Length: 105
Image 1 (tube, rainbow, N blue to C red):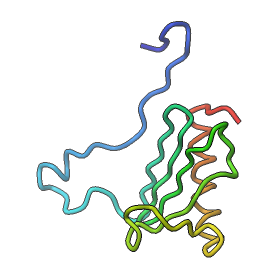
Image 2 (image 1 turned 90 degrees about the vertical axis):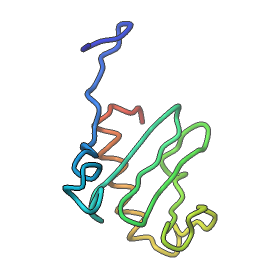
Image 3 (image 1 turned 45 degrees about the vertical axis):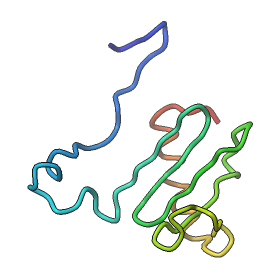
């Protein structure tokens, strides 16, 4: 539907996993693929081995943390200050995603 309980709905974002599941592709996503998600005011963006997350209440765009999943799968070491360029790159991806889903500022 286009609306639910008076709210405009937006189409789901993403790509199909079927090429990977059927063996036509060897990888699900390349290193440039961006996956973003917001649920209940929590947010995350993943691109390659890098991920930013935000679980602060109230939500503030300045509260994202940066993790490198190749060396820290448990997301224990915030690398935001050590990799400001990577942090800015993923934060720009978040802002583009937030605009797309009409996430409030």
